[in-house]
Structures are given as C-alpha cells and as structure tokens.
Amino acid sequence: MQVKRLLTNVCSQDLESSKGFYTSLFAFRVEYDSDWFIHLISEGKELELGIILEDHEAVPTQVRSKISGVYLTFVVEDVDALYGKAKLLGCEISQSPENTFYGQRRMLLVAPEGTVCDVSSPIKG
Image (tube, one colour):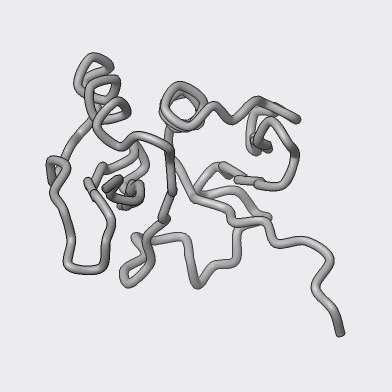
C-alpha cells in the first residue's frame, strides 16, 4: 500500500512552548490548534508536525513516557543563522554548529518537550 502522507507527532507536557519552538525556528505555521493537539505545516504544505498533549487518551500508552532512540532532523539553508536565532530565543543548545565528515554543518537543539533536533545545512564550498 502506498503511503499518502507521513505525520510525525511529538508528545509534550506544554503545547504552547513546543508550538513556539517549532514555529519560531522552522517557520511552520499552525494549521489546527486545540487544547490537546496542534498540527503544524510548512509553507509549501509538504512537511507536517503534530504536537500532542503527552497524557491525552489519543496517545498510545506505549509512548506516554520519555521516548529514546528517536530524533528529528531539519535541513535548513543556513544552520549558523538558525543557531543565532536559537541563542536569541534562549533555546537549549546541546551542540553548537560543527562541520561533519559527511559534508554537513550540524547543530543539536533540545525542544521544550525533550525532543532532540538535529539541524544541518550542506557545507558550501
């Protein structure tokens, strides 16, 4: 069966903080906003991200506690510019931008709900 759409959901205890993080840094816009679920979408509508209240009945019980082994990767045009913005917004930065062996400039952020966000851009050269 062909997949028509992929929506990644992150569980959060504070929907407003998580919404502010993803909309401020990655230019998502709010498509739907309720007291238990927020649907974010990119400008071209090709990317979607859901933020769901961690203890809501719609969340499978298996994922209601902290998840490990999962992180989100965002490829942006200029990771250094986003790093500056993240610093101004007071975001938790766990790794400043560094050049990698695989041709990316990469930084790591921690979203308010605890999701590790790998943010990178191709090294220009």
